[in-house]
Length: 204
Length: 204
Image (tube, rainbow over all chains, first blue to last red; front, side, top):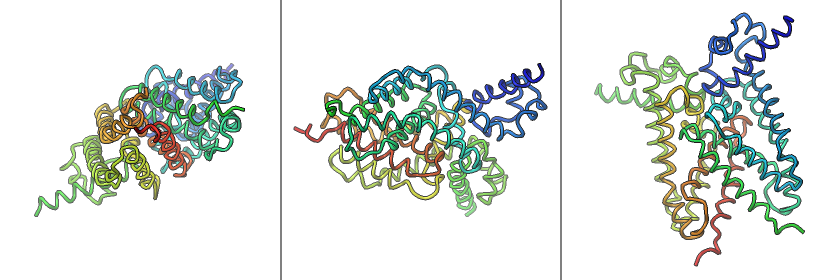
């Protein structure tokens, strides 16, 4: 019973962390803020996490699990053709752009922007999170390249990273312009690029 | 004499701010840090800036001046053809990617990522900085579109924002991967996209 309650508390802190870190960044979020926002005592907080950095590392792991499940169960995996699957992935990313800025932007991009030089453990975890998502896209992009542009000079990996650069940059510009439209426009340009890179007439 | 010294002090604080904010972000940088790093007293700091936020607003203005001058005097303006000028601009952006992460990444992207929800004045200033740079690119992109893709459905403005999304996102990924290569790869993809969007055979 107590163990269950303890798990619920830990989960609540993690859920709060995803929201508050994305809203205010890493440094501006204090342990006190996190306790207040999740309705737990400092004692409970430090029972689960030995420091704010330890919590942020757990929050990044949790973020990777949550988004990993979201992407793994997304409809684009039903699309057989790898070129169409990649485009369906980008459509799915566009569908996720709704609600408040802090709701659709990325925990990793937000945290690494301010911590890369000062918190190497967070930087490493952010890098691993990006890498894991890139790896989840790579077989699709490689298969699409093999089929539609086998002799092209770009690598599937560089295109996978490029898709993430466009999304992360779109989030930065959305925050600066207070408008999610810039992300949707960026995804539209990216889709057009993918369509051009993988010409359908290239099929044998 | 005193006025000159005072200006030198103010300038030193601003130069320090560009460096330290890009290294550690907004919240993690205290007025004390800024005083220590620029070798000025707190009294001198508050003589010039009434708060850290006021300094950050001045630093953003200074950043726009410095980068504005850098871009205004860059060699790509010598390129007559607007398509080639846009590609030369992207080459110039690639040339700027060198040294430490904090040296080539963007003050605006770094500040807005963590302050968009908590500091509306900083957000507005960041948005204005992005907008100003986009406006500086717009005549080139519009002329290139008019000449090479007059009937294309994308707008010159959306492509201008897209170039900035790619760069900002490249910076985020460089911070996460500890490697500037991802920015250079992203610029390469972006150049390929621009070349495809503006087909040379389209000239009459």
